[in-house]
Length: 105
Image (tube, rainbow, N blue to C red; front, side, top):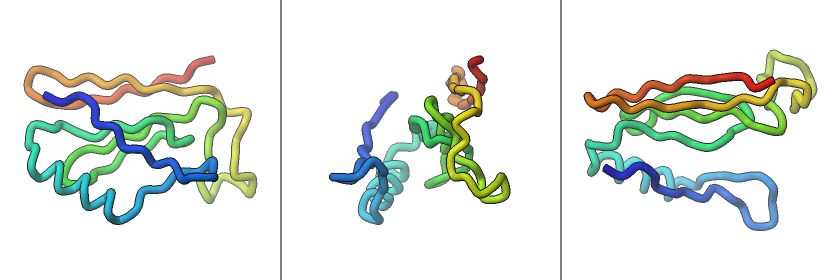
C-alpha cells in the first residue's frame, strides 16, 4: 500500500501554493485506479479541515506558525495567537482512516 504521494502546490516566486485543474484531474484519476487508497492527508493549511475528494476522505492538518481565520472570525486574515496544532492519523486493519487533532501549548 502506498502511504505517501508527494504533490507540490508551490507557485514559483510566491509564498502561496495552488493546485491547477490538471493536478486535480491527476489526483481524481489516481484515486479511481487505486481503490486501496484510504484517504488523502495533506500538510498544514493554516486551518485544519476535513472533506471528501474523489470519493475519499481528505484531511488537512493545522498550521504550525499561525491559523487562517474563517470569514466570520474577524477582519484579520491571520490569527498569530492561536495555539499550534497537529494531527495524528490511524489506518486500522479494516482500512478505516481516523484522524485525531491536538493543540500544543
